[in-house]
Amino acid sequence: MTDARIAQLHGRRVWDSRGRPTVEVEVRLRDGAVGRAIAPAGASTGQGEALDLRDGGSRFGGLDVRRAVGSVNHEIAPALAGRDAGDQEGVDRLLVDLDGTPDRSRLGGNAVVATSMAVLHAAAASADEPLWLRLSGGRPVRIPLPEIQIFGGGAHADRRVDVQDFMVVCPAAGSFAEALDWTAEIYRAAGGLMRKAGKAQGVADEGGFWPAFDSNEEALETLTLAIETAGFAPSAQVGISLDVAASQFGRDGRYALALDDRTLDTAALIDMLGGWIERYPILSVEDPVGEDDHEGMVEFTRRHGHRCQVIGDDFLVTDAKRVEAAATARAANAVLIKPNQAGTVTEAFQALRAGKDAGFGTVVSARSGESEDVTIAHLAVGWDAGQLKVGSFTRSERMAKWNEVLRIEEALGNSAEFSGWSAFPSTTAVS
Ligand code: PGA
Ligand code: ZN
Image (tube, rainbow, N blue to C red; front, side):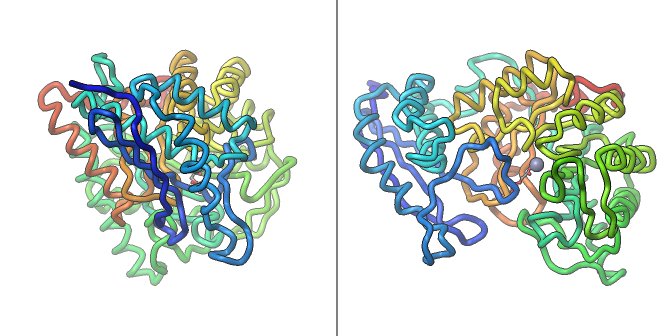
């Protein structure tokens, strides 16, 4: 007999991929089913995000999470006792109400998202269903197109290059497994090119190469060459996806590119990125201008959105209302979905649905601070997001997610449909 009411909920402190404390929540249901989840953490966070609760002080640079773990064990656990784990919306509403702030800052976004995801896992375990299948509700789903980082920059590599993520996408691959095969070859080729040129300096926060390039464009040149060296046709088979994360180097329409030693206004930044889109096989650009630069997002989307995916991350912060407003204003054509930016699973799903309703591309995304938790792999498949962004093709906190999607693709067998070019519903860049 299944009984999905919550019997026990426990928070503990564990460690993330940057060696920083984070929150893990374990939920046990009356029927014995167990769910567990770990909160991730961003470094280049948007202003409108749910806020993690950190202890401050000198211990671990102020990043300890004893108070957030206390929220789980002393407030959330008693409030959720006896609740039906199958009612994710009800659980998430209770978490939001219990917190009582617009940004989850009282209980902590880390405490809230880990609880929300742990309950989701417990409910799937109780129903004896894989999480992705439960989330799909029986509707057809696609295996997501992976966006995989080759070079890291921005806040993840001490601003060694201004652009935060130089990624590849393989929409012409026949399956997720094949997209990973192609990426592995490109990653190897990029490493070889960098070592030969003396430009590899280890790895950045998400595991991509930490590059000693002399300009942002050198990264684009090297990546294009790596795609060709690995034997693939740029654009036709493999594209570049950039996360500019422009809020990290500019606001109020002034952008200081440290590497290129230039300060640009919004129009000049859009021109520069437009030049890159002309010259390199760029299929997707995230946060091309600052999160406060609404007009800039509208202008960038008007100029380049017909041939390039324009993703809002810091700009939309996984918020359904912001996604709806951006759709009306045509200020993006795709949305990044980070559960811990929204606060709960339900709110992340609402942002994804708002994106789909608007015809946007939807990209479920990890954070730069991650763990062995693979929840987002299941969200990307079960919600039929079409795209999944996890970071690089090294380090087990990243590979755990890619490998989980491989398992799901295998379980689906012949009925597995890889999203491929259909990942980009709103651009004509794609054939
Ligand atoms: P973050 O960056 O997790 O450090 O915020 C990821 C991103 O900008 O997509
Ligand atoms: Zn981003």
